[in-house]
Length: 321
Image 1: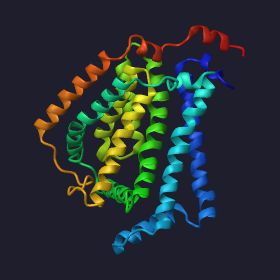
Image 2 (image 1 turned 45 degrees about the vertical axis):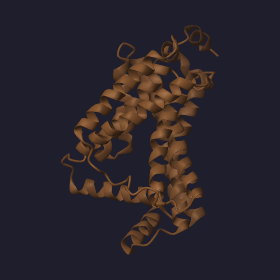
Image 3 (image 1 turned 180 degrees about the horizontal axis):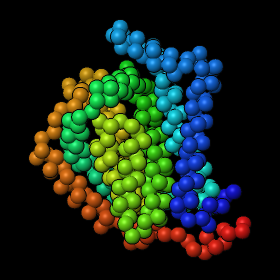
Image 4 (image 1 turned 90 degrees about the vertical axis):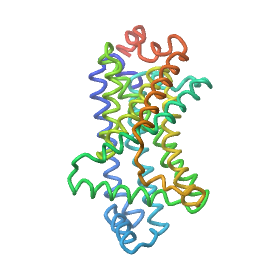
C-alpha cells in the first residue's frame, strides 16, 4: 500500500485523508465509550460529573480523575490527529518522512525567526481575542466555553515540577507534533496542490480548518491567526519542524506561565484576560509582518519550491506498483 495514493489527484487524496480521519475518530469514540470504562471504571459522563462536583464544592479534583482526564486528552490527540497523517503519508509516498518534510534538520537562524514570529504576534493575537469575545454569542454557547475553561484549569493544575513536565508533554509537545502533521503537513499541503496559483489562500483555508475543528468559537479568530502564522512558517520554509517548534512555543509558554502563577512566582493569572491596548496590537502586527518578511528572506532558495512540487517521475513509477 506504500505510495499507492501518489498517482491520484490532490482532491482524491484529500477525500482519502478525510476518510482516514473519520475512521480514527470513530475508533477513538468506540474506545472512549466501551473500552475505557471497562479498564478504568469511569465513563466520560462520570468524569464530567466528578469535575462538576469538585467545582461546586470548591475542592480539587481527585488525582485519579485528573490522571484519567489527562489520559483521554493524550489519547485523543494521538489517535485523532497524529495517526491519520502518519498512515496517510505512508499511503501517498514511499518516502513518508520526505513527503511530510521532516527529513531535514531546521537551521538555527530559521528556528530563532520562527520563535520571533510567534512571540511578537502574541499582543495582536490577544487583541483579536478581546474583539472575538464581544461577539453576540448565545448564553448556551458562553456556558459551554466556561465549562471548557474549567476543564482547562483542572488539566493545568500543577503542584510540582513533575506535573509541569507532564502537562508540557500533553498540552505542548504532543499537540505541536500531531496538529502540525495533520493541518500543515497534510491539509495545507494538499490545499496548495489543489490551488497552486493561490498558495496563501490555501494557507488561510487550512488555518480556518484548524480553528474550526477546535469548536471554541469565542477564541476562533486568535486561533485562526495562530494557524495562519504556523502555516506561513511551513510554507515559506518547507520544513515542518519549524511550525512544530512555533506551535510548541505558543502552547508551552502558556503552560509555563500558569505554573509560575500557581507557584506564586508571578502575580498575574495568565488565564485571566486583560485587554490589550490598540497601539500595542498595532506595533505587534507591524513587527509580525516584519518578522515574516525577514523569515522569507532568510529561507534558502528552492526550499519553498521543494516543499510543494511533485516529483513527476516518482508519480509515473508509482503507477502499477
